[in-house]
Amino acid sequence: MDDVRVIWAGEREAHVILPAEHCVAAYRTIRNAAIEDIDEVTPGSNTVQIRVRDDADHASVTSRLKSVASHLSAPAATTRTIDIPACYAPDLAPDIEPIARAVGLSPDAAADLHASAAYTVRLLGFSPGFAYLEGLPHALHTPRLDTPRPRVRAGSIGIAGSRTGIYPQSTPGGWRLIGATPLRLFEPSRDPPALLAPGDRVRFRRIDRAEFDRLAREHA
Image (cartoon, rainbow, N blue to C red):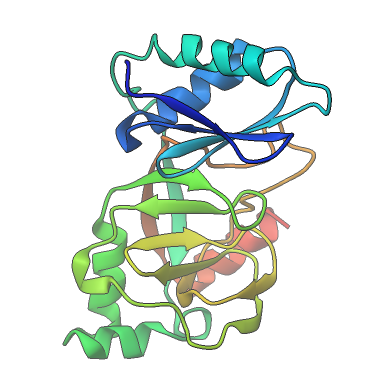
């Protein structure tokens, strides 16, 4: 493909800009190419961010990136579908009732709607292993909280705008919480550490609180 640009944003950071539908394929291709002087490759929604070594030759890295990207002919096919058990119990979903009420649904119907959709991991960011998922039904599109919570429990499933996501760690957060999974989304000792990767397909499987507690014990 020809419409690829490489823009440098400092001595150690470059952005490969290309059509959004090619970003996952570009991320995987650049990562697997093991280009000299590149330390880190991170996917975005329509860019791939590159971190290079202090003494990297910008012209050489730019040339290699364009060469690698030029061989992309079509978006990569999704290679995995990940099943995520999700519990929408009220104590795990403090925002599901007002979200449902705003669109004329019951909390149970809103949970069913969220779990019925097929999602795609667009990018990882915010915190290690945090996956931004596309495919949220339009009726559930909801803005972030005006004031972020000081602490969101690990595994919480949230909504922000047109995306849904899962908090891998306990962190502050402004997404509206509609459920939780007992799975560990990020484990530093695991290879790879993140459960989800760009391009993965995700399906949420509704579970009750008893199964959530059982699985949480298994994954503790």
